[in-house]
Image 1: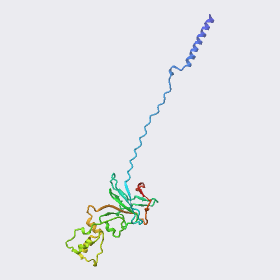
Image 2 (image 1 turned 180 degrees about the vertical axis):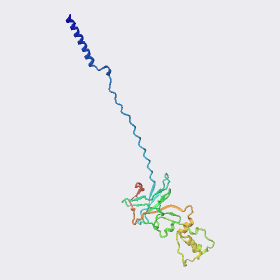
Image 3 (image 1 turned 45 degrees about the horizontal axis):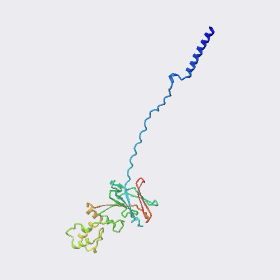
Image 4 (image 1 turned 120 degrees about the horizontal axis):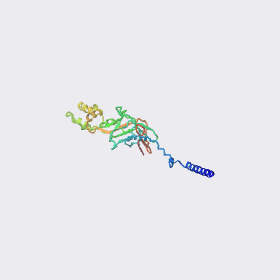
Length: 262
């Protein structure tokens, strides 16, 4: 009986140990099917959107023309620069702009006759002459500028109002009127004893037949301003080749804004 009792006790203990081994070999019930939760990336502040790039200013739309590039005389050689930009009719400063040929010989647009910047208004043009100014300055043509061209020193055509078109005093005699009508436009006459006119006629001619007199007579005319500049680069040799050359125009910052080849 004792033997049977001992065997029963041993069987119970052995069975209990087997159950415990099986139990411990399993995943604890509290951890069944549990996985390590994925780490949520920390919230980040979105990068600020890049600031919009400011719109670059539209380069001035100036147009180049050949003018008289084939002349071998610096005083007569010139190219043309025009402002006919319909989309931008504002005046464009051209002082400080640079012109350059194929060999990179360059010249810079200077100031106006008063030392200020030269502006091209819409519809205006400039003849940029290679040589030196006969007046020692750049200037804008007007109705009376032909008086500067008595010796054909200007490279462009100029004209003047006729002296005979002015209102004439009644005390001018027929000989004086005939003399006035015989005078060429834009000419300052050399009046002397051989001219054959009296003092009254001579005073009238001297007062009006000159640039100063012409300006005084016509400065208020609606067509007094000719919208045409003469600008000089001041060189003593021709700048543009007679063939196969390149004309480039750079703005005041050195950016190429126009070019023409021939």
